[in-house]
Amino acid sequence: MPDATRRILVCCLGLIAALWAVGAVAAEPLRHFVQSLPIWAGVALGARKSALSKWVALPLFAFWLFLMGCIWLFLLGWARIVSGAFSPAEIALTVAIGAVCLAGIVSCLRFKTTTRAPAAIMAVVLSAALQCGALAASLMPAIARR
Image (tube, rainbow, N blue to C red):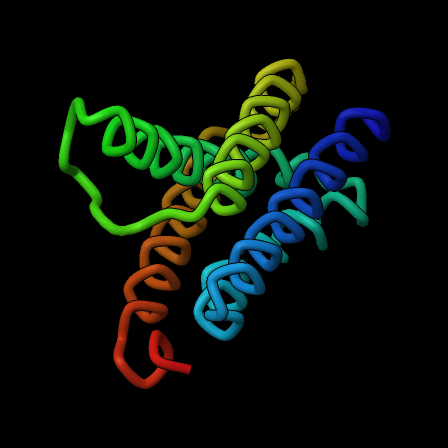
């Protein structure tokens, strides 16, 4: 179990670092800091070697991989789920975020836990809700413009 939680912890830290790097490149550090807040739960649980780290981190990795996929589809001109102007550095960071998320998802799926279904479901739902809320909060003018 310690190896699995360590991999999840490392992937969570990698995701946070990549999001902060995007914030620095895009000159929107507060926005990306807010977006990264829910991921710290995965870091904390991974550091404690908790089996719940899998259930908290998995929806976070899936959320960010989905978002990066939407950006890639936009950049390829295949879909307009998201829009915007992306610098080459930001595009490179979307690839880094996607890679970290894929590694995190694989680590989570390989991690066999004895967590009971109600606890796992609650962790997944709460984690996903917090990440959606953090993204919504980061788009508010008071945060997005700083």
